[in-house]
Image (cartoon, rainbow, N blue to C red; front, side, top):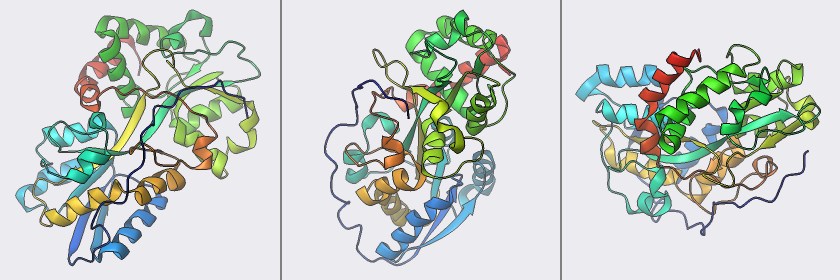
Length: 342
C-alpha cells in the first residue's frame, strides 16, 4: 500500500462507557424504518434485542421511499426510528415534519455537536471521508485539495459521480459554505472540464475506472476502498497496489465527511424504546461495529477503528456543521444543473 504522510487526526477525546442502563431489560417493540442496506447491521439489531428484550420490526427501502411512506402514513405511522444515509436526507425528514426533538443526556454527551441537529431531531452515528484516489503509476502529482480537482492539468483524468447523487450534492454544499456560491460554481465548471467520462455508477465504479485505465483520478467515500481491503470486491481488490489516495485539504478545512444517522419519528408509538435505541447506537459497542462491520468511522470520538479503516491512515476531518451542509444542498443542485454536471 502507498506510504502516507503523517497527518493529524481530529478524532480526539476519550471514549466513554456504554450509556447507563442500556443493558437493563425492557418490554415492547421498536419499529425501525431504515435505508441502510448493509447485512452487517444485523449485528447491531440482534445485540440491542439481546441487551434490552425489545423486539425490532424492520421496514427497509431507499430513503426517498421511506420518507414518502412516513409522510403518507401521517399520524398513524408505526415508525419509531428513521435511519438513513446523508445529512441532506436527515434534514429533509425534519423539514417534512417526520421527526421529533428529543432530550437525551447520553446523545448530547457522546455525539459531537456538529454531528447533530440543533433541535435534536437527528444525530449522526457513523461517518465516511470523501477523498481522492489516483493511479500511482500514472499520476506523479496528485491533487492535494478539492480545489485542485478543477486544475486544468487534470483534464480528461477525473471519474466522479452524478450531480444528482447525494454524495456529490453534500460535498458541493460544503464547498458553498466554505467558499461561497460564485467560487464553488467555478470549481464545478473546472471539474466538469476535467471529466474522463460522463458521471456514471457508484463509488466502487469510480475505483474500477482507475483499474480499467478509463480514468486516473476518482472521488470516493473511504468505506468502499476499506471494504476492498477487508474482503474481495470484484474489480478492485486484485489491484490495490495501483491505488494511491489523498485526504484533501489537510492544511485547511480537512477532509469532507458524509454522515449516516437517525432520529425518532414524529408519531413514534414506542418513543421511549426509540430513544434507547439511538442511545445504544452511540455506545462503544455499536460504534465499534459501525467500523468493524461496515468500514466506517465512528461518530463518537476516541472509539477504535477497524484495521481496514486504519490502513488508510490518520487525517484531519472537516468539522463543518452538518446542518449548514444540508441547507446548501438546493443551491448545490442548481449549480450542477447550470454547469452541466449531469
